[in-house]
Length: 510
Image (tube, rainbow, N blue to C red):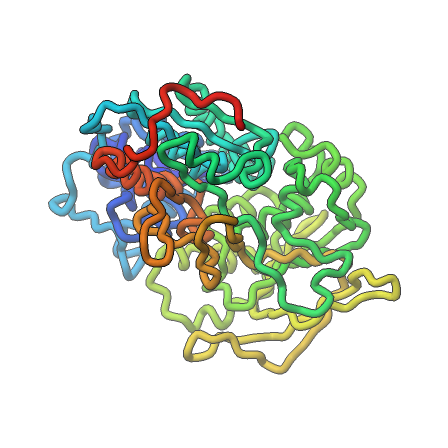
């Protein structure tokens, strides 16, 4: 039986390059690689060699006959993306005549110059570590990573749910990169306070900014800053032990919490709030958060989406992980009616709707539940006499002919003492660097930072602050590869030679 990609897929395409028969898609050269929710294995082409298993950094691939019960449906999910009988649009045609006999392998080339290359990277999240990995393939390159926190790896450490152990295992790959003698990670260093950006430019021939999208999009409602209203990202940081959120005021004394937004982070926090704390005890969850969850009174978490179920922002793997692991997931069948009127020609969306329909027909068991509600838009936050949240008013909506969200004129109030906002991220301006305020990114040309239409010499950008908050952990690999390719090209052409090369690792900060 062929191998199968499962829930933990990080999408970094290591498996694509390892596969000898090019059966894993989308590849980085295919148009939807950057937006695909995961990678998929064509069962008719897979030769069951297992090369992809060894290459996968998060253990997401396994033989089909060994799939555990809560991952079993991934065999069908993989197959559906290649079977015209399952979906009206097959993204990856099974016609072997249109396939390359081998997956494309991008072997590191020898640089045209032998001069040493010193690169500073600001940030140590996935985009930074993938950039370091690309650079360290060349023996003349040294990399110094500057991280403001006391532990590295950014969202891979502080943004992934503690019970997603397979996804968190990508940090083992980053540990391997960090152990390279030509890589130095300097913790507790804030660029702009402990060292200036100009000083980094003097220390290195090139600097890559990999600072990420650091803030949440704000909920534009009155009382959005009241006690009891938190960002889901802050809650994730709280239970993952992020030092910025260690003192977060999380009120778990009420019976209900509401999450505004229905992306993967929204499902993560809903799951953590309703999971038996005993099952979290052996994870990396913050002990402070674990003790608070043990005392929690929350019995229901409602996850709100403004659009229909067909437009849900969560990925199919995340939904499978929620529905197939024993958690009480409740869906009102009436919320799915509008989706049945849509013409769905995408296998992933079809599978989501089928799974939501399955959940809507289940009888909830005992214990806390997660309710997935659609066509609900928050319109007001109600406060009690003490100024804390006591309720959220929502308007029923529909998706109009133009795709715009239209109110239906029907409102309901949800009693709740905890409102979590999960409506996206946004980059923040970096002092000394240009910034596109409308998009929340640093303007660039293939990773080269642009300043007033021209290039900022020796300055590069990668990750969410480059492309916006999109994709998954592994998406940063191809994103960083583009930036590093631009940097190396500039090094070879002499554009970085005006700044003296640093031989070996730089010394202490000025």
